[in-house]
Image 1: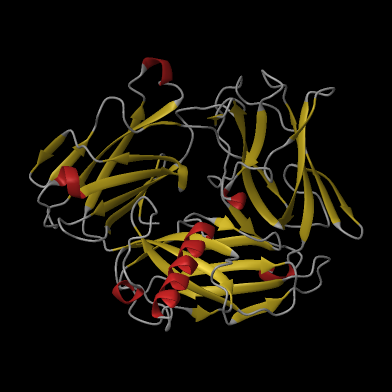
Image 2 (image 1 turned 90 degrees about the vertical axis):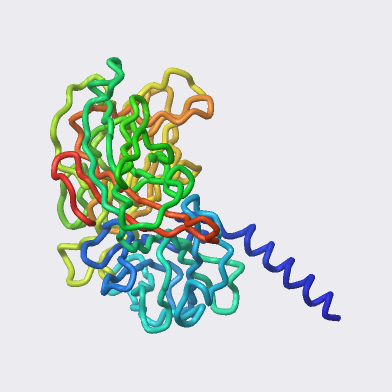
Length: 420
C-alpha cells in the first residue's frame, strides 16, 4: 500500500513538472495583462533585495469575471532556471503556499473582468535565500494546472560591478552593435575558484532571449574579475521601440489612426514601415515595456477597458515562407501563433490584431527565416540606441546545492548606473 502511494506521488510530481514551464507564461486565454515588477516603479525589473523592505507587485485580469480562489507559491531555481532541488523549508521562512485575497471587479467597461493583485514578500510567503525564483499561480487545490508563472529575483548584494559600453570591436558591426566590458568585485565573497563558482548573466532590456553568460574572466587580480574579451558581450543595439498611446478611447493618441466604439472597442493603428534603411533618430521609448493607463477613469486597474488593436506593416519578405512576429514585454517577447502576423501578398502587407488593455505600449517586429530569428532586419540596429542592461552575478560555493544571486546592477547606455 505504501509503495502504491509513493508511486502515485512520484507520478503526480512528474506531471506537475511536465506542465509547468520555468519561464514567464500564461496558460489560459482568459488571463490577460500580467505584470510583475518592483513596486517602486511600474514595469520595472522584478528584483528585490534579500531582507529589505522591497516589494514586488503582481497584477493580472481574469476575463471570465466573477470570483475565483487562486493560490500561489514560489520555487527556488538556479541561474539557468532549473529547479534548485531544495525543499520549501530551506528557501522559505514561512508557509509554502497562500491565497490571493486582493481582487476587484471592473467598472464601466465593455469587457468585464476581475483584477487580481498580490504583494511579495508578505506575512505568509517570505524567501530566505537569494537567487532566482518562479512564482506559480493556480486554482485552489489544483497546482498541476497553473494559470500563470513569472520569474523574479532576490539579490543579496555582496559583489560590486562596473561596466562600460563601446562600439563593437568588429569593424563591420561598429555602427550597429554595443560592446560591453565589465568587471566584478568579489573581494567580499569566499571564492575559491572564480572560473567555476562565479558567473554573470547580462540581459538587454530585461530579456532572457537577448542575453549572454560570462564564466571566464580575462584577468583575475586582487578580487577583481575583468571581462573584456574581444568578441563576447557584443549586442545588436537594435532601434528605439515603436509605440502607441491608448490611454483614451474617446480621442486619438500617438500612432492611433481610428477608434471604433460599438459593442466592442476597435483601434486601428497607423501603418508601419521597415526602418532598416533609415539613419538613427532619437525617439523616446520605454525599452519594450508597457504601462496600464486610462485618462478617462480613476483607477486603470479596474476601469481601463480592452480593445482589439490592429497592426499593419508594409513589408515584403525575402521569401514567402518567412514569418513576421510582433513582440514586446506585453506578450513576454513570445514568438508563437498568438504573435505571428498574417501576410497579404497582393498588398505586400503583414497584419494582425491583439486584444489589449488601455495604456502605452512599446513593440517591435521580428523576422523568422528558416527557423532563424532575426531581431534587426525590419526595425534596424544602431550603436546609439538607448538600452537597459541588467547584470546578474551568481555564486555557487564549492559543495553548495544552490546558486546565490550576489550582485545586480542596471546600466543604461545613456543614463549610466542605477539599482532598478
